[in-house]
Image (cartoon, rainbow over all chains, first blue to last red):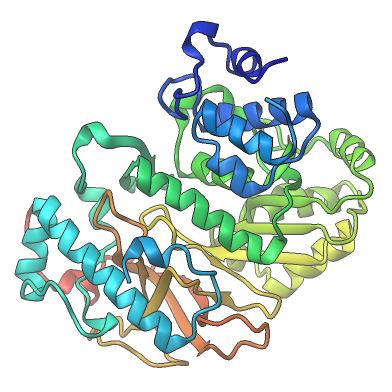
Length: 75
Length: 361
């Protein structure tokens, strides 16, 4: 599954909203509660375990990809 | 050094002289910022503190009584920049405080919490048991300080299990399965002190249940001892019960309040609360408000370089505490170490902060 698809299914949003510049908190579906679910969905999808700093730094779709790359995920 | 640069320091690294200089610069800069951007704050500083923008020592910084946030909305950024409003739980008969966060202040708060907790727990996110119920997750209109604290700490863990139902009864079967699934990894527990005692420890005692958490598991709890003191529960018996019933040997209390983001003081292995690089405490005589020295009990003033979206960088609390030492705790962490004795609860602040006329704002 692409990173975009994980965002769509985890946050329950439409695919055309999801682009690299979409920021945490910019839409009501991506709030602090949903963020924890999103992190765990990404971790499950790519079989990684993020550190706390990265959970907090994940402030946009683009930033999520950058963080996942750091863990060796090809996105 | 600016407040932003100070935030990059390691939490317990700077020695007292280094820290004092950094904090003074950061806090002076915030006083100027808030005076420029928050008219009511500027009026208070002019009326009560002779309008001093920069001061030479921490004890000379202007401060606000913490309960001012219950009476008036204080904010230093345009309203459209506010992304989060924190509302204190507010016990019966008390007005809640309202604290306004912009993106920058909210994100530095989250980061600093992770940095401080990381110093005690390590960087890896542990499986996390939350001794509370999850109803606030479903009804996000009930978002208060309690929910904000749970969510703030949630980023430290993974595979979160909320142990209690809406009646605050523990689901012991869920706990058994959870411990089975995470047999080899230390577990992080989080909860409010009184709920941990009543709905976890005492509930297990009453039902004669005990569990074995993996070695290295740690409990973080906060919210105050008042209600436990009423029941004659000491810190020692609290810790002893957790070790005996659950095998949890690491227990860290924390002190903090919704009115000052970033002021989060963790208890070390030697039972002392610690000030990190980004914040500090002063103790003042409850009557004269003069600063007191090490070992003297008085009102706690909290200082933090984080509050930028609202003027909360220097606050006089209604809590009583004592500084135990500075840069000399056996745990090796620098900064002041202190103890909290409780709150001046239900006390009209006559003879305390209200003796000074706070102008109507």
